[in-house]
Image (cartoon, rainbow, N blue to C red; front, side, top):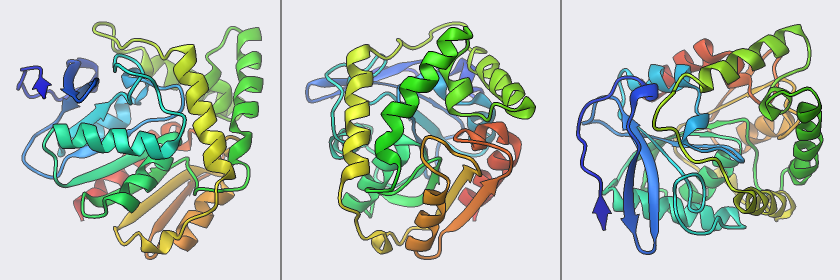
Length: 286
């Protein structure tokens, strides 16, 4: 196992240096910031995303009082190897990364595909996770999840025709407020101007779509086994992972809490980033 050496404390995600750690045949790219010493908050990101796709307003708010770690899955961004075609393999890779860092207890903040991975991770390694935040996501076998590739391709074409970022269509409503929020989100993602991550490859993107389809078509699992305190959040009009699945998660995970943000889509937690960040920090600090 090898790690890069830089122990400086960083308070802004835009300034967090990219680091690497090698375990087995994979070198994982990651960034960390915030004060160390407590239970770290590990970020699990969405389809086609790299380290550069986390909203700095959310990350910075959490990192004011928490050690935060973001990472690229195998074969994504600057991480080496081939991206898996199953969510379960992604969870195994995440566990390998966390083990390489020597982490024995973490909190999880996940979004979309990252929420799928987090569910498998807590199922397989329940003692690892203290608190769980699931946003814009749904359960294994959730109705509509298998349609994510079709929605993704459709909105990518629409974005291309208007010279927009696909996330403006995939994450946000196409009304006045949604368009404003989408543009603002993309601008925030561009605040980091140096040491940016590699974009996801076409092969990795296709493999992730295969994994999502398999997740959507798989047999549901017993989510009542999740005993960790869990916060679930989404917009009220999620076209990628239907909002009803957030309600389904809340009903099936004992004691879980649900926040639905109005007039927002898949990226509701980014459209309402101030409110979500406050809720996430309050949840983590209990």
